[in-house]
Length: 82
Image 1: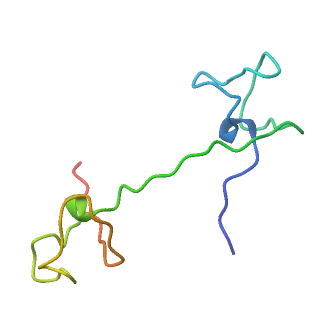
Image 2: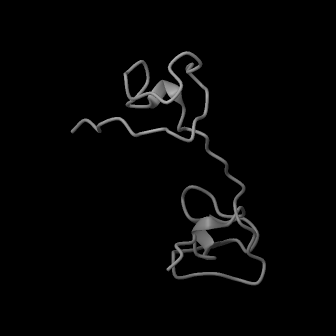
């Protein structure tokens, strides 16, 4: 089963942070969508050596090349603090 973002108003570029549609001038919620829907363009490359649990550790796949900001297919999340 694939997981995707839904085509609802909260993922639309016309909606503000306070859930107001700038195109239709109405308040919206996750239940709303329309024919003018346009997905927000958002790329995140937050998984880099600087926040990898393996950085500067024996488990690092590329210890001699690893640098903060560098992306890697062996990236592992750091433990989340409570």
